[in-house]
Length: 319
Image 1 (cartoon, rainbow, N blue to C red):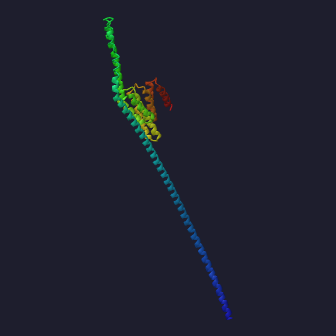
Image 2: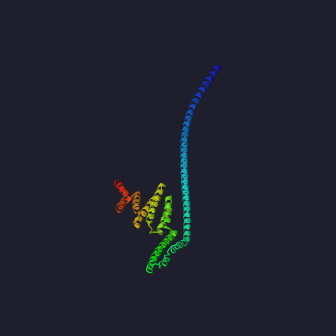
Image 3: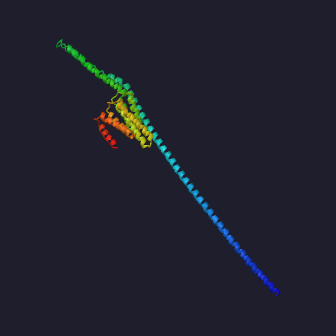
């Protein structure tokens, strides 16, 4: 009996111990699971935040990289444009230097020709004097009568002065033209204008006006200075240089006005008035342009520009 009782007690104690261990083991596992879930949730949240921050940093880095690339491309484009502009300027300057050298050579040849010209011109008046021997006719006249001999004497003096007056005029005109011929300077400036070398053309026409202000072509030279300024304004406009274009167009207005002020009887006066009005229209001054067009119609009613001025006036008034 004692042994059975001890065995039963030991079995009961052993079973009770197992149950308590199982209970304790079950509670500890649930707490661990809850803690693990909490840790996992926190880790997930941190990972998501880290991922979002990483994505934002990557996007910002990519944006900065694109901005740098864009800035780099813009700088490269600007540098290339500057290089192209400098290349064009150098080529233009070199062309102008070549043209100036050609003009200097031409002027040198003209000066050498002017130095060599006087002997030729002095030799030419010689032939008219031998051509004036009506004096031998006087010895042939005496056999007829003594009275007729007097009229030939009067006839011979009249012919030599006529022959003497023409050669000196030729000599003076040729000597001046060979030294500095107005037509050559004018044509050289106009050639520069036709080539598109407007700065050279302006300088050439100004030199013409400085040396020959009273020549018949002076009004035309002043007119072409205005046209050259208009062409320069067009070039600045095409290059996107608005201030330079406005300045050149305003200068063109002043140059066209000089035609009418200094050379009112020039053939280019009506054209200068019309071109001045067009320049004023481009300068956003329509009222002043209408005044100049009306003045053109009233002052030069028979000119071709007068017809154009009437049409332009009608267009301006309908605005």
